[in-house]
Length: 460
Image 1 (cartoon, rainbow, N blue to C red):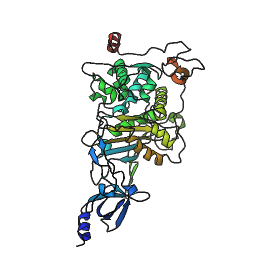
Image 2: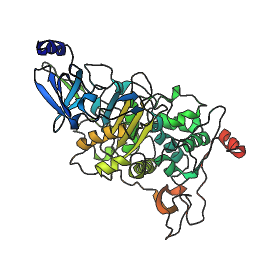
Image 3: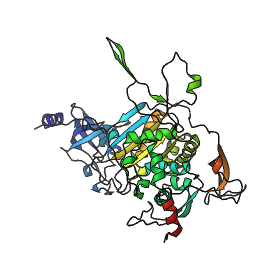
Image 4: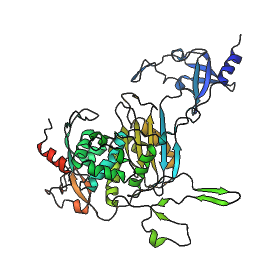
C-alpha cells in the first residue's frame, strides 16, 4: 500500500522550526534522495546538500564522511530539510542555543534581538540569561589598567603564576615571557590577564567595570578568575558595556519602545533616552525635544586607546576573520570562550552599531573541544553585521586631544628609533608617554598587597 497518506498525517504533528522543515524520506538513490514535506510536495536533495552528514561519534568527533546517500538516510526516516540558495539540503534542528543583541551606541536603542533558535520551540529570551563571558570581559580589565597609568606598551609577564590552588594556563599551553598589553589582549593570553588583575587588585578593576553596568557588587573580591570572565553576565549587559567603548566613554541604557499612541488619547508614552552629545548645552534648541545627555564614565582617551587595542584583535588576533570577510577599517571587537568550552561569545562594534553574540546549551555542557568564540560566534556576528552595515560609511571614534604616539618596539614596548624593523606607533595618554628612546615607561598604580607579592614571587 502507498504510505504517503500515513506519512502526511505524521508530518502534520511535527512543527517547522526556523527554516528546518520536517520531511519523510521517500526514495534513496546513490547520490541523492527524495523527501515528502507536510505540504504534500516532494523535494529532491542532491549530494551537495547532504555530504556534510558525517557519522556522529561524540561531541568532539564525526567520522567517517558519507560515501553514498544511504549512509545518511533511509526510506521512512523522519528528517529535516531546508531550502538552500541552489537546492534543498539535509538539515537538523540544533540542541545548541544562542542569542544576538544589537544596539545604537549613541542612545542605547535596541536595533535587533534574537533570543533563541525559534520562539515556537522555546520561549526563553537568552539575551536576558546570564552566563560567564570568558575573554569577552577582558577589555574592561585592560581598560581599568589604562585608567590607572598603564599603556598598551606596558609589559606583563606571560609566565606561570600560582595563587593557592589556582594555576591559570593559556589556550595553547605555552608561555611567552614579557608581552605588551596590546599583544596580550590581541592574542587573548590568559596568564597575562590574571597577572594584570593580580597587580591592579579588585579595588581598581571592579569599580571600573561597575561604571559600565556590570553587577560587580556580587563579584568575589579575592578571585583571580574574574579576570577571565568567570562571573555570569547577560548578553544585554555585555552589549551595553561595549556600547560605552564604542561611543567614546558614555553610559547609555538599552531601550525597546520609542513611543506608544492611543487612538483616544494620542501619545501615552514617549521614551526619553540618554544621548551621547558632547555639546548638548550649546546646540540644544529649546523648541526641540527634550535631550538627556548620557553621562561620561571614562576618559575619552582611555576609550580611544581601548578602541585601538580592540582593532588589533580584528586585524591580527582572534577576530581576524571579521577583517577578512567584511574588509572594513572601523570594526573592533573581542571573542570569548569559557572552559569546556561551554559558552562562546563575540562582541564587536563601530561607532554606529554594537552587537553581541552568545552561543551555548541552555544547561551548560561542552560544545566540542575544537570550538571557540572565533569559530562559532564570530561567523554569526559577521552574517548579521554584513547586512546591518551594508552601504554604510565607515564610522570610528575621532582621536581626542591629549593623545600622543611614540615609535615603540612591538615586543618589548620600549621606545624605538626610526628604522627599527620591529617597531610600530603606539598611542599614549600625554602624561604617560615616554619622551625618547631609552626612557622607561611611566610607573603604574599597583594594589599595595599585589606590590608586596610581586617583590617575592617565584614564577617557575
